[in-house]
Image 1 (cartoon, rainbow, N blue to C red):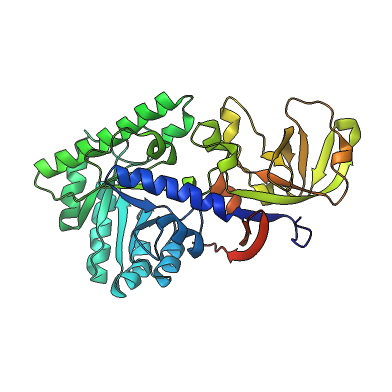
Image 2: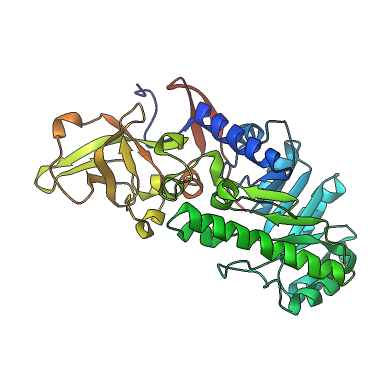
Length: 371
């Protein structure tokens, strides 16, 4: 079916992408909040427009390069959603001078003061959101911490609001647990916003975001926007959390069979970790999917086969838990598709998407990389 495509290659099912994006847009719109897609997942203009259902709109990025690329393609409301340092103000200031509304995040008094000094020197407005720690997952200040008001004071008129990321939702074992984390996420930023407002600070933006909590949250009361990215493609980690089914996963890696190890019950492909990524996010879940689920060229999972091991350019296909393989189904030069653990990490290994419609490759979309 894909004999003309050089392997390993990244396939993108456009119809699944469109379905995933339409479903999430409808859910967020029903709650009356703004959807701010995180475009680090796609790093591509065509897919970003599908996510928004429009030529442009509010987006979140993880690199300055992403901000520049999407600005050049018509996006003007951009949140740089990684802790800000002054050295990045110069490049982002160029976008502000060209008409962009660029906002950033900080989570310390030192960071806030440095940001205010840097934008003052650059003579641009660049509001900062205070990152709130809603689950002890990574960065941020707790909503009840006295430092919250100190950061707000240090930012002064440059305070744009508050934001959080419920990363702990990726560690849940039930949808009920995800709902509980979603409520904790919402409550944390709403409480932080309340404290800042009572202290006399404007706090227009109250931002939350993770694909699991966006999918299962029961309320967004007090929230103004939702930032999410993986939902566009979905992946095996999301499937393991019950966020999606395997059939919702829009990307896969096309690989060719390059060898057999019959005594070990291995099929060897040219899709190693350089094509799939090192991400082993499902290892912590009830079902360990190795480096990816093996499918036929039509995208249907094959028995209980996974990429059990991966070297740089070699993927080792085996049955989960061991067992015999019918090697006649995998002749040399035949092709397989592999569903990824983490869509962002796998897509980052590739420079382009081979876009599928009706199961056939119809066009190529370029991806970009760099910071």
